[in-house]
Amino acid sequence: MVGVPGRSKGCNTCIQRKIRCDQETPLCSNCRKSNRLCTGYRRKLGYVFAPEVRLANRTKSGREEETTSVTHQGRWRKAEPREAPLVECQLKRAGILSWTERLMSFSLPGRISAEPTMRQQLHYLFLHQHLPAESRDANSSKSILPNDWLLQLRDVDMRSPALKTSTAAFFAARVARINNDQNLAHQSRSMYVDSLRQLQDAMASPRTRLSDETLAACMALSLYELTGSEGGTPGAYMAHMKGAMMLLELRGPDASASPLGHSLFLDLRVHEIQRCLIQRHETFLSRPEWLAQPWKSLPKSPHDELFDTLFDLPAIFGKFDAVSRERDRSILCAGLGEVIAKYLEIESVLQRMHQDFSKSVSGPLYWPELSTLESRLDNEESGKLFPVSFRFSSFSVALTVTTYWSNMMVVRNQLGHAYNRLEARTSADDDSSSALPFLQSSCERDSGWEFMAKNVCQSAEYFLQDHMGTLGPLSILSFLSGCFSCFGNNAGDWGREMYWISDVMLQIKKKLGMTASTPLGG
Image (cartoon, rainbow, N blue to C red; front, side, top):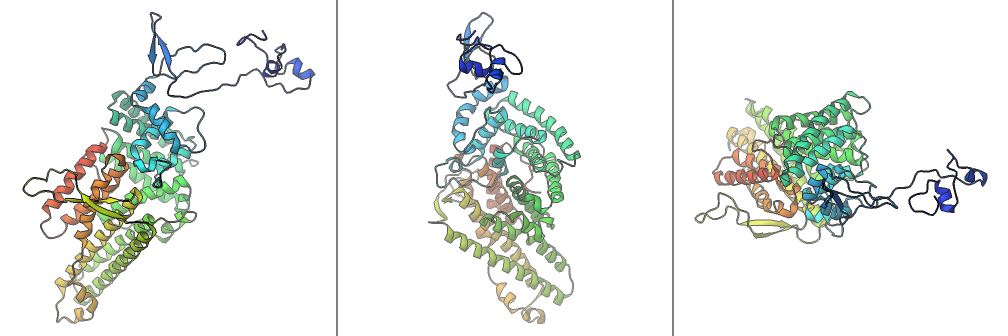
């Protein structure tokens, strides 16, 4: 009846007018006769999410105990307890509610979902563990987030079952590994199996086959195999990445202009250039349209421009390999001259980019500090291989500078091989060498690749700090792999350097939950 809280059955309009309602449907007679809008009989529901909201769990004996569940309390009714779902309790133990409150300040600027799902909460917790601390502080001047596709998922409408389940599987697996939660790990494996079937369905449909969401689902499954699951295998990871690259090519360069599509493209091209440099193969990403059209609505960052230079290298590798098999000395020298000239051109471009970037940053890019990074190679007799490490003004600066050093290392390493090959086939009184005077003088100078490689090694400690999340170790891992290859493919006693790099890479893989045999781009 009217006036008794929680008992009135009238329409919302009559309740607001405080009159008796005849409860006719679809419109009550009071509203119909008075020409008022009858707003119906459904009540508006309000949800309040707060860390202090708790719910009593009623046992069989009728005694109430505290639980970690969230209560949904009616307008006039006393709160009734409900049993908390298993996953929700596990997330509470993992500290997800407190993390969620912190993450709201930067994860969802301007709006928040009315009813956060468990996948969203897993996503928030994962981002907090994944991102460097400076990127999580919305008030910091250094909070420029990297262009990571996992961040772009915040603004994606999760209508794709494959994307929804695959990302939930990966996020749950990472949270489970960090918190050693076997129940959550088991649920992540179940979601992974479901997402495989859903991805197959998405690939079979012409409407969803080439969508951003399908490509992102494929990437999420590859990350699950790489760092999420204890049972992940290198073969499964590479299979997912191969499928993702095929999808990327089928989509074409124009499909990489959206925020999510662009960030997926950037992530995949890092993987692809690593594979091409290792296998010395060219890639479709080296074509002019792939170096221009994905940025038609977005400016290239210094990091993007540095990576652009690497896509010229596979073709030069092929030219060098073909020329090296040439038996005619004049043709050999001419071909090597072209190769060296191209390397020198790329080196000049990289140096100019680095100078421009240095001018755009206020203060020093980096500075030396005493190293505290431990290695099994260290001992009292020989001390530390790298007693000094580098610190950077921000994570984005560190990533750009380390990319520059890594690129210069690759270019100068290959330049040195070309010089050595030329010296082995020419002499001072050779007619073919006299035609290349600038090469003859250049052969006498040091290529300098080892200086760049050691700079990368001395940067590792910065990326391995606890507040760098998992993105820091992941970023330096591929750079260290390149350094290891350079030291191993050059003459000289580089045993200590290679042992140190191998030890640090094992530390990183253990920290990230990766197997020792996990490939890096190959």
